[in-house]
Length: 365
Image (tube, rainbow, N blue to C red; front, side):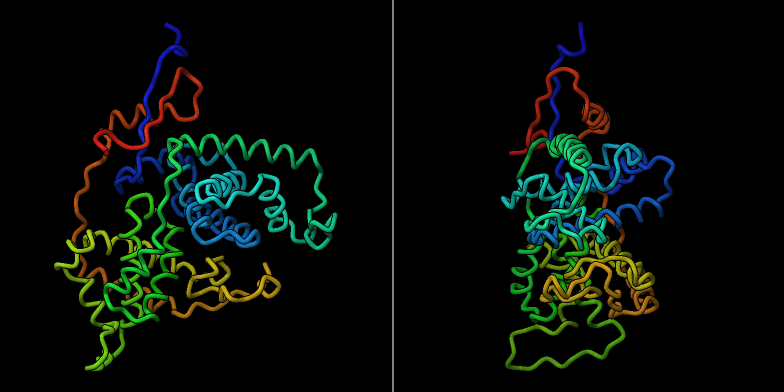
């Protein structure tokens, strides 16, 4: 029987185990080392950040685009797709998911301004469009739409998306954390989208990890602050001591301390890399980046990098201290059997037979 006459079912895989992510990443990495792969990942995240900020996308659109980029390269080799085209396609899909839709041409023109700042200074018209060869623009548009189709297949055309940012605010209030700590947790959660953690854990766990790391950065190697007897707000030390130990808060918030620690380590690695390399681009809402309240005219693409508020050796000492008292990682069971998952993943991007995309794994309601 002709292969084109077969019917196949592919189920949406919302989250992966760390072992699954490592296995899939290694398959698509090719000849790149893990360091080179991480560098490429951060370049793409910075590019999406710059393009999204130039257009004026909200944080949820940029964060979801970064997550879509990470997911795409679990299934498709890096050598087959340049990070510019995948990044722009991820932004385009994200605009559909969050109802902040822009035409592909608008996204492309914003990307040209980021990639070619010398041309951005010479707009072609009052609309601000850059003087690009129409044939080049059309080729880039077609590539963007081609990658868009592949990204949609990786999410099984499921446009439902949740981000961790609302959870940071709600959990900060539930924990009686200070506004300063909650704000720092929110800004750290922004940079967590540059890691692979959102592929492995739901957004409320990401949010808790941002608050946990914020409490560590606010208390490590510092004297505990005295709590005011008439104040309901907990001190940073009280928040940190609660989140670093197992307790009733885990069941209350459906979070496990082992997962929180794993994500905090991944996020801390991002901060260490940024502190060691100040020229590395970070998100504009992170502690080591410009204030988001600056006007666009003030946020020059080639402005001098902002100094990280933490020294690299301080962050390294914090990481060592976290390792000394951390809980062993918990075992996680894949949502899909390994053999079945391998079969489904092999069907992505291929035009063979009829594909049925389901929004959830087997047994999901």
